[in-house]
Image 1 (cartoon, helix red, strand yellow):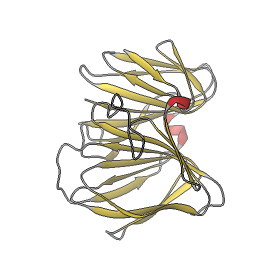
Image 2 (spheres, helix red, strand yellow):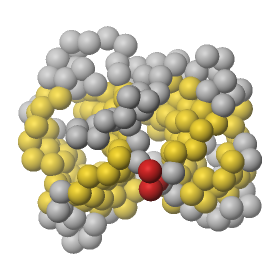
Image 3 (cartoon, one colour):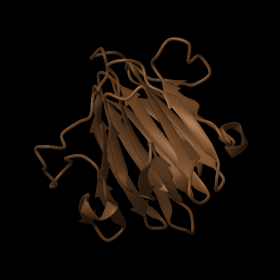
Image 4 (cartoon, helix red, strand yellow):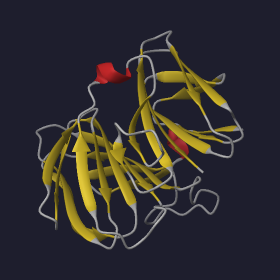
Length: 232
């Protein structure tokens, strides 16, 4: 089963400095049919105006991944962590027993991010934060795991969930396959470009909910960047 969710039909919120699209129910957007996909709870497509951002606020018991698509995001938290994550790179915050953080676009240009929340396997653990550079060349033409709580994904940023975040950059005409273990689901979004997923045409910003498929074949109809989450 492959269900395309067009970008224009996603939840939408505009707060002046923030223009957000919600793939799942979030804040004032509610859709009883789109509460989660496996352990994936939130996938927000956020555009943040220059010199603005999310002021300090708290989270607990959630794995929060920020995938930067354009510009950069600067994180600061109650553990004393501070870091700047640039386009193509990833940061992971395991909120655990509780953490307060801020995320600001301190740049002179708009920052665009995917903010992805995944339910952890265990709750109440100490909070952590980390970031890692992933040069685009490492995922050219194939999916590369960026964050994971699955066995064998030792090079990825760790998360406390049986889930995986992977990404690929494809030139027009290139294809990449992604194998899906039995009983697991995938949610896929092109950050840019246009692709076919098992023959279904998908444009930048669209969501693709996948279940009961053993393999995805992603073909780029134009130069594209593709991000997915796999979970049970």
